Length: 118
Image 1 (cartoon, rainbow, N blue to C red):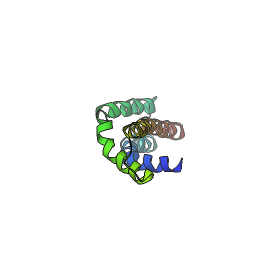
Image 2 (cartoon, rainbow, N blue to C red):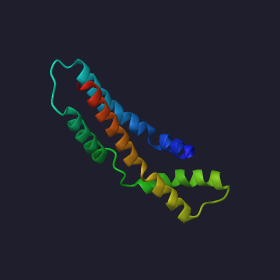
Image 3 (tube, rainbow, N blue to C red):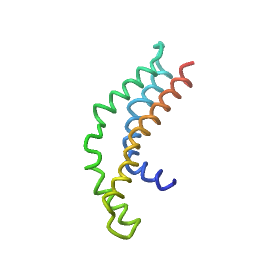
Image 4 (cartoon, one colour):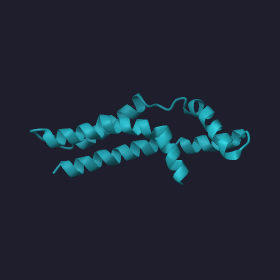
């Protein structure tokens, strides 16, 4: 399970950091220093995050982009040339990583909204 966490950070770490820096961090700064409060702003930011996910971070060619990387990882792990089925299985596992990134960012946004939105 640890190696999947390593692969997640390697493949999606920058994307998660970018999403946190463009959504959760500005929300926290706004909630701390704004002289006025906007009701349910964390839900607006959450909607903006979903918008960003589908506009900028589309995984249209996710399989094509990840196939050489996955082939290299499997070749190191198996010490042989991986089959197409093994590559497909691993890419399917990696295909859930963008959703995990969106969920983690959503949890961060809601946590910031609950903590600072007193």
